[in-house]
Image (cartoon, rainbow, N blue to C red; front, side):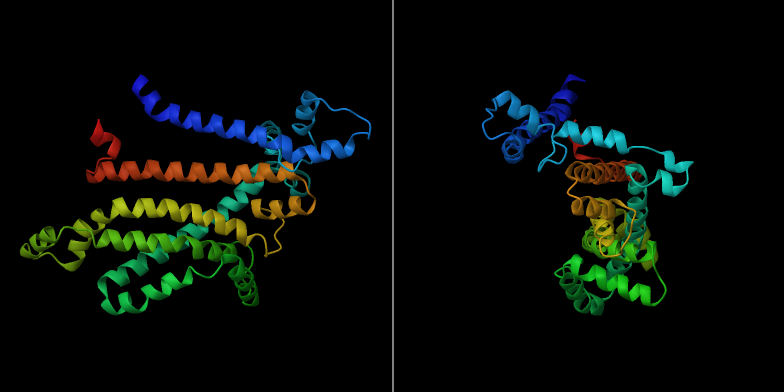
Length: 303
């Protein structure tokens, strides 16, 4: 137990404490200009008064962590579950997180499907490998913020609005790491084992299902984690040009227009927490699948 705390908890706790200290210290000079601007010309402001004011401003340039926590506590309401939306949803970070999560999961599902299909085509077809892979790589050089409005307009012209366009934009960011990881994994199987499968007269599908696919899992899951985080970024970006009123991206845009920095940071933290929860959940699935396939993690090997 002590070894686990020393190896796992202590390093993370040290980094968190260091970040908090730097954060609180940085808030003082960044918010000090407003303190001096609001004070009378002949007022003398002590350091303690400066610290107290810079850590409690209503619209600071850099909110401090306790302000963000209090804002999250205020916004973390689930009243929209039983109230009319016009009364209960507008400032509920839970509701807006749920909206963004829906777009994220749809985009990740699209990206996972597209990524796996493309990787299969690349691995099993030399023509696809030489013709499609360069275009896949080139597609990632185009900024998503430039593509998002075009996708919204095109989808709207064919009558698709709401969740589907945001899922398509989210898919654009999420499929690339899955293609690369899955392709690398499918090509990582031991050639000796592939020859052994041939001596057993195994079909191409049996070789894929029993050898290549299990060999690809250690590569696919890390790629899926990157793709899932990218899908969240894509979902947030997709809410900016779509004119959406709900979702973390839409709320970030509204709060930035109003210069409400504390709610804006609260939504940013919500997005980060959502990404962490999704990646942890996917990591649990990864461990279960690897255990089923007989793989061991680095921690298990070292112990």
